[in-house]
Length: 410
Image 1 (tube, rainbow, N blue to C red):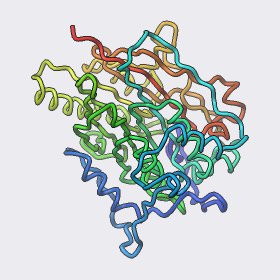
Image 2 (tube, rainbow, N blue to C red; image 1 turned 180 degrees about the vertical axis):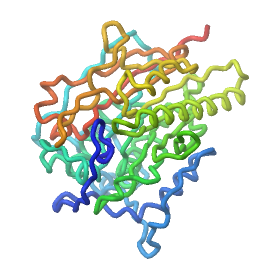
Image 3 (cartoon, helix red, strand yellow; image 1 turned 30 degrees about the vertical axis):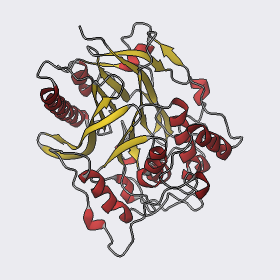
Image 4 (cartoon, rainbow, N blue to C red; image 1 turned 90 degrees about the vertical axis):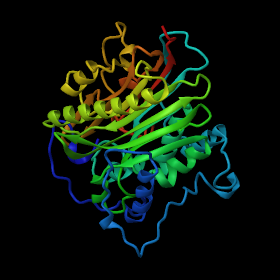
């Protein structure tokens, strides 16, 4: 959730100075050529994201060096595999005796099977926004430092070891997330916002955006499309990635999408238009691959993850629920009737007040996929009176994790 786009409030962000003692990790301008390379290598796309290349300083060398805390010489060459258990131990050691992380358990809906696909959806909170603009009034500044948050983020990911990882507000892709997760066996793509608010923060680490990671031992990469979402044919600042993967064990294809829609009350119409554009683009990708593989009757399972910045009764939510793609929201499976969304996926306190609501979703094709399990959400007591983020948790949004199985063809 971006500072100038909070739900229910509009305010002009002040130009913040970088807080001494908690470096954000480099300058923005050094990353633009790498961002352009990422987009150009992401597969064919009908909507390319225009990057503000006029900010690029040709005299400043590109710096995408891997984070030395995770990628020191003692761990091997930059391309050698990392042991997930060892990285988890490293995270635990670095975090020391600070408050423990949340203890969350999976709620089983079916027995599942060995070929289940685990998907994680998470807005990790952009570092520049967390330190520079977001004003979490009860969160100690030390809890917002990247030197701490990066260990909590990696710890959260490796605790649940998703096969597919969909992230928003990523502004440390090149120096931390991509090099570390690549050595843990993940392939990935990154799509930055064309006008990221992170760039207004002094000492930022480049634009934030969406990232999609996949376990290369489980999937073959087939295609990826980077989208700049449109509203009434006009490009907006919100982006998405649509990736086609093939399961190595079943040989079945699955389409994964990740997005982060416009925030703030009053922009419901824009979120609805962006959601419609995303649904149309996803359907185009699925139809292209279905026709190329087995004809028009071949149904490719679909999973769409994101921070929609929309509560469950908003128009964009209703559009997804009524889509001809046959989508359902996986986290409704936490409720007893399987019809109700959780009470919250984000809980924070800002100068304008407390916000406790549901904005994050994992949508899936209910005709071709079955929800085997969902990760429960921490209670109010576990979250604590200062809410999120905190020493226990690095983001103002909670991660959502689901296990899916392919339904048998009828």
